[in-house]
Amino acid sequence: MLVIKCAACRKKIWKYHKIGQGEVLRCHKTRIMKDFGFKAKDDKIFCSCGAKLGIDKGSFYKMIPKTFTYSGSKINKFKSFKKGALLWL
Image 1 (cartoon, one colour):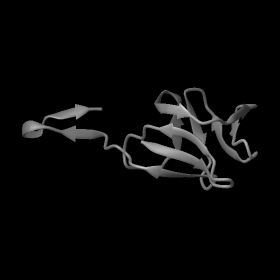
Image 2 (image 1 turned 45 degrees about the horizontal axis):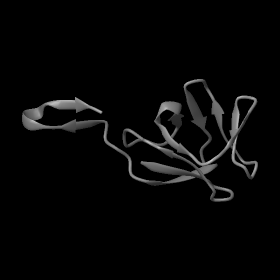
Image 3 (image 1 turned 180 degrees about the horizontal axis):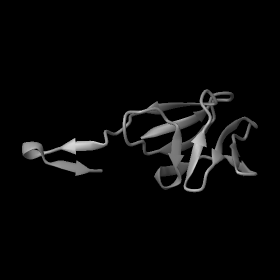
Image 4 (image 1 turned 90 degrees about the horizontal axis):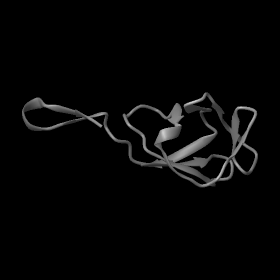
């Protein structure tokens, strides 16, 4: 679970369930677990301090690099069990 924060004012934006070890380029709306408050206007998302964080693309937010920071851990896409069986999370 990652905590996404504004890089300008350090205010928490949301808790996000990140699957995979890659960078945070998109935040899917169904994986946002807790919303700490942000503003949405004209298909863009802003922190309460006014910093532009991303663009609303329908089912996900396209995040703008260097406008946010995050802390926490990412979850691997596959988890292996007995004798090579794979489970999709």
